[in-house]
Length: 283
Image (cartoon, rainbow, N blue to C red; front, side, top):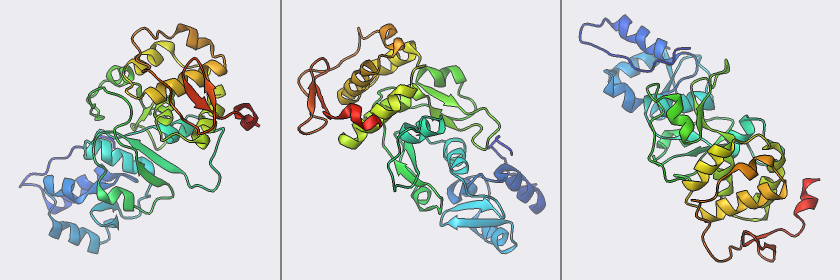
């Protein structure tokens, strides 16, 4: 698989050189949009010839895949982050599940690829016949400026905002995800209901190794009072040792009560309502 996603087409390139360079860029799973192809010297009539000759396939209008290639969510993310250069990352529930934090599942629901970031998801991305449903979750709760997820962005820069680049040998290598510290706060920012609170509560025991310094930085840059209060209340309920090392000095927790669950029990410290039967849901 080739992850260097930039190709240069010149007037002197032969037809075979242009085709070979494109196929090398695509590898087995990477998608490429017609917009990107036009910008790199592959007009529509040339793509039509590639399709007719059996070199490319189009899983949905406006995007292409190497013929015989496999359509995967990893290939979609590589296209969005590397080729389209969109500040979109895998976060929230899907990032937690990939990291092994999948204690609680909403039965009957298909796996959902939860994407966060300020950029608009291309129309073709939600029309791909993937096994996973693609969900654009918006900017998320953090107020940091958007990062580029290309290869030029240093890992240290990503880490400072709670991101990590997959470096293992799986097909997700190179894709940028939220760390567990960021992903759990993204999940806490979802519209609150009883199911969400129970889900976060069930995930919380598996988050015993969160890094307090990163947690503190994320809380400082999190604009969602509800997400911060829910996260802290449930972390405290599970008595995580790292919580004692998280500085809340510059963390704005707002004022007044927040009703997360109608007719719930008030957590007096964080002024949010939680399900009265929360412990029973751990099963």
